Figure (cartoon, rainbow, N blue to C red):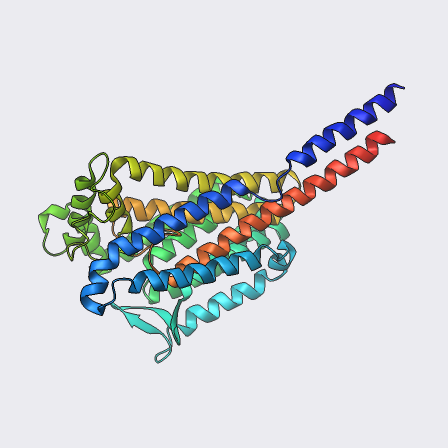
Amino acid sequence: MSAFIESLSAVKTAGQQKATAVLFDVKLLTVALLILCIGLVMVESASITMADRSLESPFYYLKRQLISAMIGLSAAFLVTKVRLAYWEKSGMLLLVLAMVLLMLVLVPGIGKTVNGSTRWIPLGIFNLQVSELAKLFLLIYTAGYLVRHGSEVQQSLWGFVKPMLLVSMACLLLLLEPDFGATVVIMLTVMGMMYLGGVRFSQFFALIVSFAGAATLIVVTSPYRMQRLTAFVNPWADPFDSGFQLTQSLIAIGRGSWSGTGLGGSVQKLFYLPEAHTDFLFAVYAEETGFIGACLLIFLFAMLIYRAFINGRDAEKQGHRFAAFTAYGIGIWLGLQAFINIGVNMGVLPTKGLTLPLMSYGGSSLIVNCIAIGILIRISIENAQYGKQALTRSIKGGAK
């Protein structure tokens, strides 16, 4: 009799859980869409005057960003239908593809050069920034490697060094473009994933020291990077030349005060702040929405990263290690890039050409960011599926 009552209780509990079960991470999707919508509004606000003056089309950048957003959301929807097992099996292929694209962009006549950097491959009406795809592809390869060679990474130095050598090769190609910002993001993301994969702390610390030393050497031996660092330390020493961009950004953020100048009320976007709709979009946003709006946006990004790690934790609990490492990697990547972009805008980090995820103008960045969110949604879907299967098994076991 008691066994029968326990089985009825288990069925009742299961029914309640099924009734309240969510098929995917709604919070993650909501936060991502909010950031995306804020980005669309701010791209139009930051670019309308410039587009009207130079292109005689005030909605030029908004239209292009809307097209990229629609492509990105469509791609994200398709990605949610792809099982993670296919991504895991394709890890090595994606690594090779990333390397080929990074080499291809450096071939004269193929890569497109803008402001001294060769980062794009023209594809008709669309320019592909290969570093954005490389971030995602290298992340997926690393997640698969940690699953296949997890014990080797934890116990052997060579198991840790092998993937880092491949990632270093990709970073070298990025430095040839040059794209120092993407190099930093990729390297730190992979290092974070390796640390979560259980690499020995002594090895991890040695890698951090090596990377910091290499980065310092690159900055010191590169005149324009050294100039950026000098301007970062004291932008007001040369506010009309090397420190111009940072000082204008700081003025914009300062003008925002507590509640901002109001949507469309930014003065710095009126030909004062360079790259107002791309790398320095946050400065215009802070000017128009103030300290309150800036804190709200930072909170949204924190929630996005939190949901990524929650999905990774749930996948790890269920033994789905590839999904876990992929979720952790995407969380580190998006969080790190948002942190660097906002830090640059606020003058706490040296200037880097990195977009604000899901917000800054740029088709490649927006589309790849949407795909990353789609992968996170797929991870949450498979987490729910595994949870239902485990619940069904426990119900059957209780009934017996």
